[in-house]
Length: 222
Ligand SMILES: [Zn+2]
Image 1 (cartoon, rainbow, N blue to C red):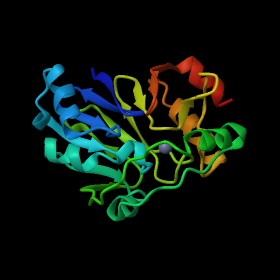
Image 2: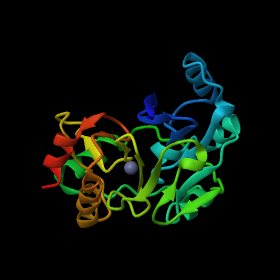
Image 3: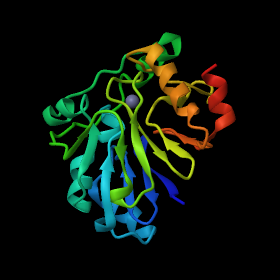
Image 4: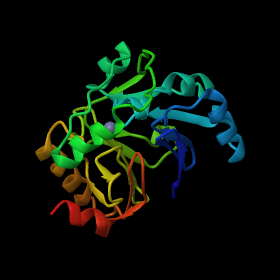
């Protein structure tokens, strides 16, 4: 049974998954290395016991601190093959708005201070599925495009999914909705439906919020 602990750094979450081994999903952002050291110490965790860093997608707020985390943990970095060139160049992956909420969101964050992304070479580059059991976590990553063309989700045998930004609470009314940033709306809906096809999944974590119930998520993908 995996234990899931989302930890806030800046505007997004690093999600710690503890099973017989330990991995993290995404890096959070806007935080210095010391903040990570403190957060792990508070949880009684030795960063060197973290065996893998999964990047759900290459938007800056999910991966900008990957260099710091890799240094701290010594863990390999895993991402989708479409995220790899972005990370290697330290580029910004564009936020493509979907609908009115997306446009208003882009305006809302226009003046926010974003992190500079330092280039990094990912160690493990995945395409479709990737088994996480060699890292001590019963589960896998699956490709879930739509929010970006490099989005992956972590699906655990114990019934939880950590899915980056496929779903996100609206900053305007707080309600959970399909990603209002999306490169492909059709693929986005398909990705959520594909996750829901996994009957064992009961709990869903976003990159900024959650947990959300299966019932709430199901309503968005009708
Ligand atoms: Zn994103």
